[in-house]
Image (cartoon, rainbow, N blue to C red; front, side, top):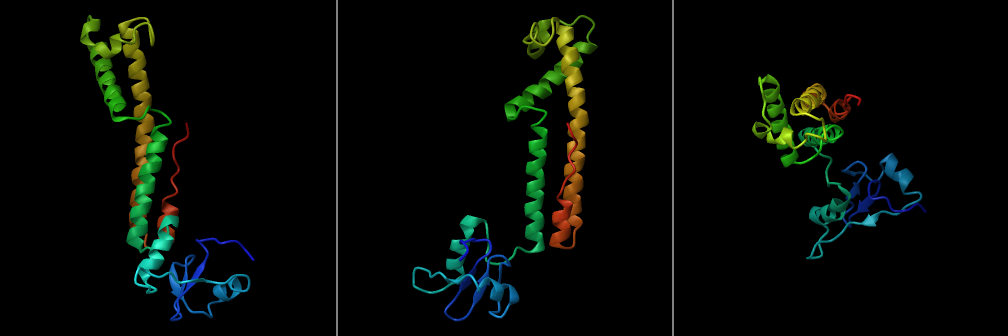
Length: 195
């Protein structure tokens, strides 16, 4: 007897309805996959609701903790989930290069702006560039040196960030253009830029 696997299990209602979590659909009891599975397993009795009825809602409650739904998601649902997955993966890729947090992002943007202004100025004074001035003796020995390091790092980020964004948007467009769930899933495999 094999162990319980909620992603590959069957529930049988008293009225004969047979649900497969692997297919996320109702099946006939003579379905070959079920017949093979039932040689070593017994289906679980369809769950009941608070009134003792075997309902779709009761089975949905059993499936939900495993990320399963009663019916296989439609193409639009698959695409929406894949787009979210792509966005999350893009953020993980970005975090390989930058520090997380909205405040940190604002700091990076302001440092880049101060570096541009400092490098364009004829006689830059530290008091006009407080974020850069705070790094004198840490990042570089002079204000201009800090500005050069920050500017170079920002330039590198622009290249990497643009590659990540192009990959993200391209994958999402390919997912949206897909006509089947299989095509959409294949399109969501993103070739992120290497470090």
